[in-house]
Length: 396
Image 1 (spheres, rainbow, N blue to C red):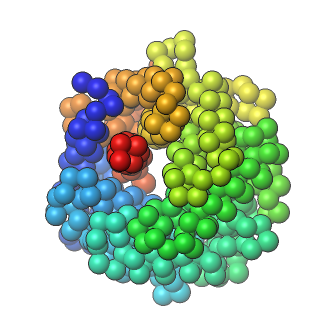
Image 2 (tube, one colour; image 1 turned 90 degrees about the vertical axis):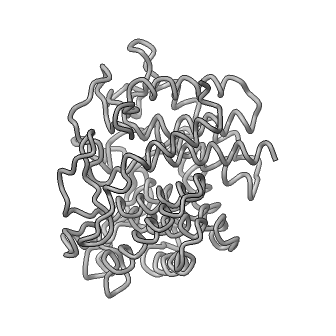
């Protein structure tokens, strides 16, 4: 078996979606049931996280495209209906967490709205009715509520019920996923405004702000977009906003920069992509304990969080493949194979399907919760899809 074989990647997409489908379809309340244990049993039927809903729409749309299975397109449409009829609120924003159909947390996260745009864009690629319109509506909402023209970036959080209650925190993560969503929306529609925005976001994060951090992407910023080097220093394992540099975000940006380069190539993109990837692997790959990637490191270069996260390895193999295909450098294929071999051994559940979420430094699971909110295996499934796309375009 070769991890570089397109048939392997397609079958891996099938194995992931088969773990969730059809058990995740919620025919009682609508949307999906996100919370599954390793064996597929459900531990929470009620919680519906905005990002989880969007990621299921994405996963089903990709599975429909790659596997040509009508049931997956129908499942994506089912989720799009949940977004528009349950998560979307009367003022146009999307609630963060529902319990059944009731709003449990109505705050408006830019990160969540980025995934709404991504879900709509990928559903549009799959031919789901209403998806193009939802993408356009979401873009307009973001422009009105989250976009900061002076900073040329998006704000992060707006409190429920008051569009003027903008949180002072600013972060790169929401903007990175907004870049991803804009690229997908451009691919789905061909509309230049999506590509224009993806290009602007990538340059602001990976050039303008990175130039103030030795060419690296820092996570946290103050309201004026100056680096906040101490944010969550006392909460380094925060789920959405951990302290430190995240090598997984370096490799994720590598992937996005190379996708952007397909459509609007500029001289800075490949060097920045290579730099981020090379630093990520140099800093985080565990050469002493059987491979894998440490999660975070401090501004002075010390490893901070030694846990291994499923999404980091996923983004890394996709980035490695993209670099290998773009540059012809066999060393990137070596990294691709190493990332896959480690993941195949430690993260992939060969009995039930899907990926485990997090391992400790000794490659042991913390629990049997395979899919807590908002994990849906969007990262490994999407990484397989983007690798297939890069292969297809390279051979065209």
